[in-house]
Image (tube, rainbow, N blue to C red; front, top):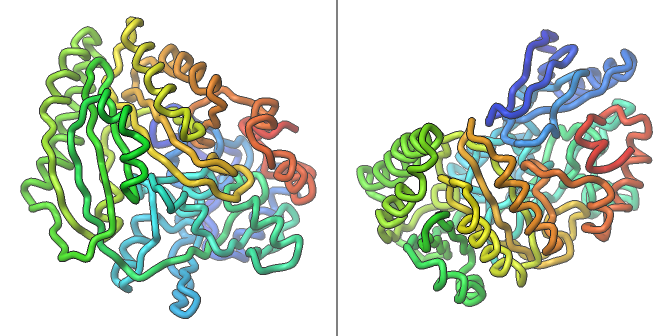
Length: 439
């Protein structure tokens, strides 16, 4: 087993730090199980960490921190079952690239692909979709190291206990054990045509249901302090592939979305009063574009500007009203917000702690540039979201607790009862899980 050193761990955004007693990097399932058993013998808590893209303390521990850097790679591609089994520490970007070489693809994905597969699924990472749901909803099987150090394989086709674990552990928050491998459903690679188009706030909100119904993947971004939005429509295409030109793609995705945006955010942080004027100019600079490419090249994009984020899942029918309230909040306050507000959707699914569990869902995500005070903005937005029965993303900033979640999730008790069976001594516990799941 590689490494037993300890140092300060920081997440991607820099808003969470932890000082574990030791860090380990197991290179096999056997080594991972041994690390879990040894931690239990030493009376230490255990948390596995991915690439740190969560903004909460979900992975923070003062016990044993398991790094998945050596638990990577493809175990098996099964073309009969149309599945791929991957080690838990495999980054999504590597999985996507391997699948593309094999002429395969996930059905849907989020817009960031830096995360590990286990980190992304355990916190409920999602993209946007009318019919296709989160990454976790594409899981066909899981391998889990439980509190006694044993290896538990579960799927929807196993024993009653294995089915119960599968129903919950697809979004398990690290509370049920350490995920060691995941089997995803895949399909033959397809093409998506992306259509990006500026649209006014009033138009996109008044036509939201139609835009959602007419497109397989619809999302939009509203620029605070303006009446302007940018819309994105991704739909399957017969082709041919027509990716963005190298120069125009670089201008749009790197210069505008990362380089220039970094400068704008830095200026806004230094001189907040400039933000509304900059927002008006930059939101008007957007132009329409259409291109066709393989899925991960359309769904995902580089995110080099660091930020802190809060996102709430609402019943889809509530999202327009809630967004209008957020706009009114920004307009009547002295808040200065340089980051766009993102709106996406997901169909209802059957995962106990999925933010879309049992209901058609729309998401509102708010961001603040790294190093900018975010509490006042996030607190005010959270008040709006909770009034609409919102469920916060498990990996993004929020202040909700177990009492709130017991009301928000019909199957919350099912999850906590399973946790009591699998981890009665809370080997995998930490302060975050105490808050959101109770003790």
